[in-house]
Every structure is written in C-alpha cells, then in structure tokens.
Image (cartoon, rainbow, N blue to C red; front, side):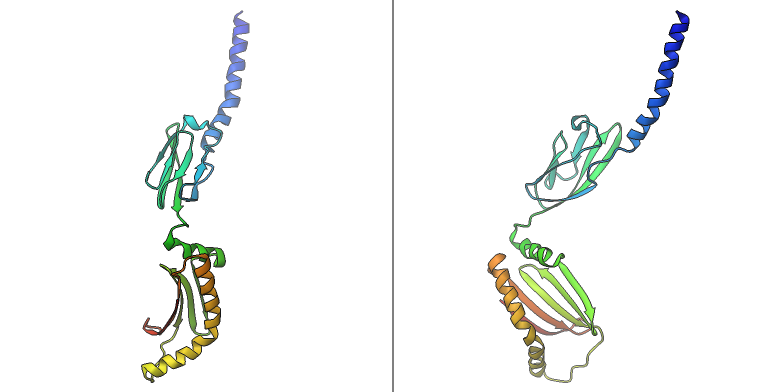
Length: 210
C-alpha cells in the first residue's frame, strides 16, 4: 500500500515539475491584444489579455471622459483625448494607450481630408533653396514657402506684390480646383492661404482664396 502511495506521489511530483514551467512561461508571456489604439468617438474596441477570461481581469481607465472600459474589456470612446486602459491580473498590470478622435467635428474635417489625400496633416519638403510646407490651420489649408537663405528686397511693397502674383499665378488654377473640392466635400467656409516667407520668418507675400 505504501509503495503504491509512494508511486502516486512520485507521479504527481513529476507532473508538477512538467507543468510548472509551462505555467511560468504563460504568466510571463501574457499581454494585451493591443498596446495602443486610435478610436473614433462612440466606437468600441474589445481588449483581451491572452487567454484569460475578461471577467477575471480588473479593468480601469485613466480618463473616463475620453474612454471607459467594461468588466469584459470593451472600450467605449467617449470624447477626444488620450486615456490609458489598465488590465490588472495576478498582481500585474498591462496597459493600452487609447487616443480618441472625432473626424466629424467641423475643425477636424480638413485634417481628415489631408490624412486621406496626403497621408498626413503636414507635408513638408525642401527643393531648390525653398522649403514648402502644407498644413491645416482651423478651416484653412495653408501652403507656406520659405527661403532657406535670406533674400534682400530692394523694391516697394507694391512691386513685390506684383512679382509674387506672377509666382503664384501658375498655381492659382490648381488651388482653385482644390478649394472647390474642399468646399463641396468638407465645408463651405474652407479657405486656402498661400504664403511666402523670408528665411527670418518675415511674411513677404500672402494670397487668400475663399
């Protein structure tokens, strides 16, 4: 009887020895299904912590006005901003940084348009001594051109404006077409602003299309 009991104990010890390392590995390899996420207002996203049942995890949000999380790990985006969602399990914490945006807000529509058309809310490049930047500012789409080296201006403001109009003219038809599209697809108050700066950030010329 004692031999049988001893054999059973030995088998159990062997099983524990085999299983324990797997459990340790599983515990250390736990991670949330997302470490960061961008969400639209009113959208939902479900987080998972490995194979752990969601209700066994303690969920919390650092900013409930931005995002809340249910006991099942379902995030609901509430308002623009950033929030950290924390999943606590077995005395360890796992986090997901959530950024909430609202592309339907009036002031965000032009940024959304830029992301769709150009892949960014800012496009910047340097060519032939001129730095060109395209960006959104409120309801305006701004084209800013800046000389990399300082340029001495020896003409009157009127003469400078005439010269700059000549520079701007080849672009005006293209920008007018873009403006029509913005006003039709984004909002009627959209504007396009074309600016030229000297290297010291002095505004040399400005043209507003609206």
